[in-house]
Length: 437
Image 1 (cartoon, rainbow, N blue to C red):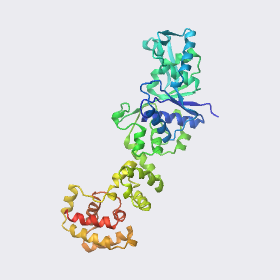
Image 2: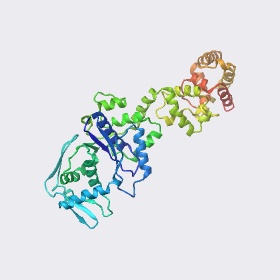
Image 3: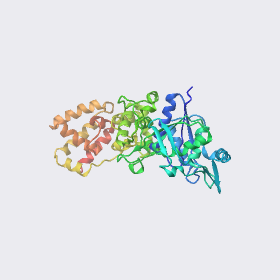
Image 4: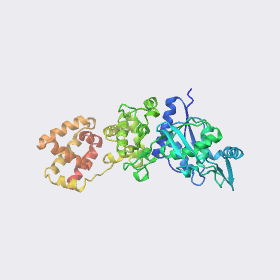
C-alpha cells in the first residue's frame, strides 16, 4: 500500500468552481495513480461566510464528478482545541506569545525560506528582501479562531499529508507555513503548486467569464465524464496528443511531472466539443433517460409520445447535441402544435408561386399513406414521385417543405423529420402555411 496521502480543502463560502474542481481532480488522480489516499478537509473557520448550502453543493459536485474520498470528512471548526493546544506548545517554547486574546508566532527575521517545489523546482524567499514575511504571524485571532496558515500546517501534519497539491496562488503562503513546520518539528510535505486556470483574456478565470461553478455546468447538460476529461487536460498532458481519455486511462497515465508550468486557458467551446464526443458514445436508451428531465423542465414530456418514438427522436439529434440542455430547443418543433416560420422564411416561401399547390398536394399525399406504411423509406419514395409529378427538384421541394414543417431552414434528415412529426401534424402544418403565403 502506498504511503501517499493528499487532501482537497475547500472553504464552504461559495460553490465549487472550475479552478477548485481541477485542484481536487489533480489530487484525486495522483492519489489513485499512486494507490494512496485522498481526503477532504472542510476549512470552515470563517464562521460568518461558511454556509451549509455551499458545503452540500461542494460535496454533491465532487460526487457527481466521481471524486470519491477516503475516510471521514475533516472539519476545521471541530478542531479548535487541537489548534489551541498546539499554539500553547509554541508559547511554552518561547516561539509564540499572546497579544490580548490573539496569539502571534515569532517569525525568523533574517535568512531565506527555501523549499523544493515538485513542479517549479527550488523556490526561495529572502526575508530581508521581503520584510512583510518577517513580521510576526497571527496564529490565533482575537475572536478565538485559528488563522488559515496555522490551521493548515497543524492539519496537514496531523493527517499525515505527504503531498500538498494546490494552486500557484498559494506559493506566497508557503514561506509563512514552513517556519511553523520547523518550530513544531512537523514533517514537511512535498509541495506542488499548479498553475491557475485562465479566462480567454488570459486573466484568472472568474465569474465574468461566464458560468464557473461545476453545478452550473452539470445543470447545462455537460456530462461528468467529459468535465473530468476536459479539466484534467487543463494544465496536464498525457504526452501523445490524446484528448478523449476514460477515467481509468487518466488514473493510469497521470503523473505530476507532466503538469504544465504555465496557466491553461479555459475554452467553453472546447468543453462543448468534448462533451459532444461523450454524448455520441452514450447508448441511446441512456441518453434518452438523461434528456427526459430537460424535456420535463420545458413541459414537453407530456407531448413526447411513446418511448420508442422518443428514442428515435433522440437518435436523430445525437450527432447534433453538445449540451443536453439544448435538446428541447433543437427539437422544439416536434413538440409544438403550431410552428410559424420567421418573417424572412415566410417571404422566401411567398416568392415561389408553386408552393401553395405543392404543400396542399403534399398534405394529401402524407394522409394517404396507411399508418402501417408510414415510415421514412416509404415517405421518401412517395415524396420523390410527387416531386417528379410537380416538376420540382429535390432542393426546390425539400427546402421550402422543411421551412413549412419545422419553421426552420435547418433540421435533421428531412424524411426522418416528416416521419417523426407524424402525418396528422405534418399535414396540418402544410395546410396552415398555405393560408400564410
